[in-house]
Length: 171
Ligand SMILES: Cc1cc2nc3c(=O)[nH]c(=O)nc-3n(C[C@H](O)[C@H](O)[C@H](O)COP(=O)(O)O)c2cc1C
Image (cartoon, rainbow, N blue to C red; front, side, top):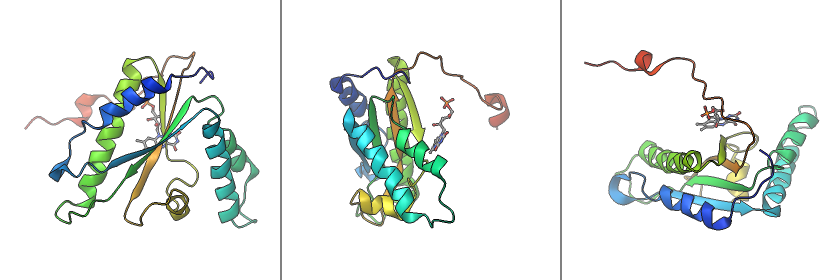
């Protein structure tokens, strides 16, 4: 990314797309925390500090700390996507996660259609229980990932290992 900023209003429009994801039982489990400007760097610092605090000193790697610290340096916004588990036991967790992933993909499609660069990351402490504590989530909620948004001077690689023909069977 090149450090260029996206107007907050445009990020709001991208978030609106998320609300049209499919949702079994209308539980609408997707939730988002949005960080802009200096708040992105602030979060990255806190993320790196969580890694340091939770990693035994024998296993601690300065390179991993630095990676987390600088992850968002050139990003414009960071969106943390959460699956907030509803209280409808008839809807399996898998489907709540699937609905939230669809909401995230709606954002990424909007990102791609408007020339924004987006990156879905689950690096560092994303899946560690401490992240739920940090974000004040319930145990049943799931941190689905961090979406870093910004602008890039590079074209996306658009690389896939195998074609769709190899993944589809017409019965
Ligand atoms: C749930 C999920 C988590 C991901 N986490 C990471 C990550 O932590 N680090 C990483 O390099 N790529 C991660 N990726 C992959 C990138 O977001 C991206 O899809 C990949 O680099 C391929 O780029 P493309 O989808 O634009 O072709 C993740 C993807 C998904 C779906």
